Length: 233
Length: 233
DNA sequence: AAGTGGTCTAGACCACATA
DNA sequence: ATGTGGTCTAGACCACTTT
Image (tube, rainbow over all chains, first blue to last red; front, side, top):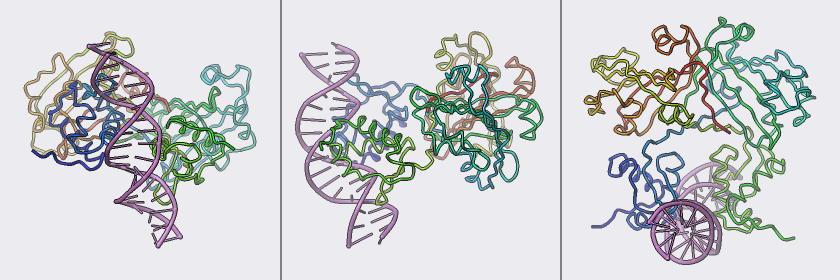
């Protein structure tokens, strides 16, 4: 019996997927080790490694040294969301993008904000509120705090024509951050800005980014009702 | 001048990150090719490749054959969300998980559902509604349609003690799917079930999974107010 | 102690996009 | 036509974990 030959890591991956899917390798079960698979598939071990590593990264396999590789018992679906600049998001839908600065002021933030950003309670931060539009209709309202200790150039930018959303990506790199998605009932002032009924359910994205130990910016985006964040699995 | 030596792909990646971050390589700029970097770093080209490929996957670099590698002008933040089985999600928070089946019936779905699932309008699907609890309090309500043409075993499962959420992962593999997150105002019946005021803003996850060309299941999960989906960047 | 995945190397060829 | 990233190979050594 001559083993079929798998020339590249994608075909190896496809074959592995087929076996998992066909229940030849059942959830929780140990699969052969890389060396054996390489021999069976007629390729180098590193090719098998590439295929299996990629499947492990997407959550379908559990791999541990010495313990071997198992089919994930309950594959954790990894949904990768692309969080783009809002202008690109709007333009990507074929709509005309618009932007309006609402307020911009240097002020001492509420405890909630300087707590999250770990800035001294007495330090003023730059507070920017703005509206993003799609085809002249409100799309999302942005409420942002910027740590001017970390991004001093923000002091000289008026954000009249470019959104902080976009400006920061260009001038304020970050090393890591946190993001949270939730549903909130929109407060009255935000409802006015978005042109929706107070208490409407709106989608919220909260983001906090850091440059090493220092917080760069904290932002909440509220989207008009009907907004959906989508991705494929 | 002796180049420092980078022994492994992570240290190469760190150095690349440092240069991007320090603006030695600016957004949009072309960086040296793999062979040159390998020489500079004193390692094999494949090690450089591993480091750069990984950064490209996370959106920080744009790579194209012949055109070379550039620092992403506007790095699209890729947020990877882990969508686990609800029981694990609850237990992972240190809460006690509970489950209640609400209804289970074989019925012809509304047009909206069979349209999305691309099943014949006359075909009955299995409709399951259930409540997930955390520490005996409502956590999320699940409204699910199962294509029994694709998962006939579902016909014999009563879902009294195991949620469809969990059961399907074990017995109904899927090849791909779509997922969407949104904010909705909860309807009266769901509000009753969740024990919240009607019209409350709740977080919704809609998922539709496929086995090749055939839809497997379509589900909407509504979470109690306060729910957040979080991840790091 | 031993078996597994993780990684590195040097070299090679290929695929693709640009010029 | 050419330069770039993408991949494969065979072999080697290492790191981690379980036995």
